[in-house]
Amino acid sequence: MQRDWDSFLMPYQQAVSELKIKFRGMRKQFQQANEHTPIEFVTGRVKPIDSIIEKQARRYIPDDLLEQDMQDIAGLRIMCQFVEDIYQVVDLLHKRTDMKVVEERDYVTNNKPSGYRSYHVVIEYPVQLVHGEKKLLAEVQIRTMSMNFWATIEHSLNYKYQGEFPDELKARLKRAAEASFMLDKEMSEIREEIQEAQQLFSYGKGQNVPMPKDTEKKRD
Image 1 (cartoon, helix red, strand yellow):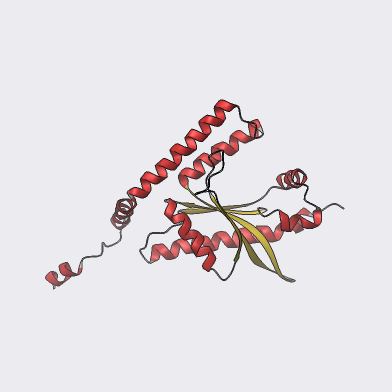
Image 2 (tube, one colour):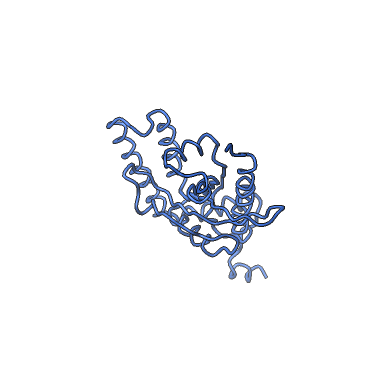
């Protein structure tokens, strides 16, 4: 039986739209409180139909188990500045009452043999439809911008080589992943100075720098 893809994917499209708004709202709340936001930016997509069909065939997923077994039909990506931010975002997701974490895979601490690093969280999210509520799965990938740069390049090369990378290229990619993670570690070492500089930069764009209490007393 031919699947009606428009009807099938519509709830996933709604979920991605709603989740992007919610995650961006979290970022905005940190900014309004003049706190460091662990969320740098958010993207999302619904998996293309041809990608769903290809993955379903490759993993031998029956039609009746598609929604259950393919967890990334709805995909969100949260980019962070620092490795520590990744784990803060994961903690925030666990505390939400409008979604439920059902699975998580830490490829930051336990990176893949290829060098790939990211934190994957599968959530169960309820979408409100005209005829009732529908709970569906969505995958949230949380990573630093450095990790994302490497993953994007590796993903592009995968289309050319279909996962069968030449040994030399594979070794280069792994070295690049290690260099990328070293950059993240260095940035974490000077994280406080970076955040202070960013805060001063924000104030320089029109906000008033908060004055120390002693200074305020002298002016009075």
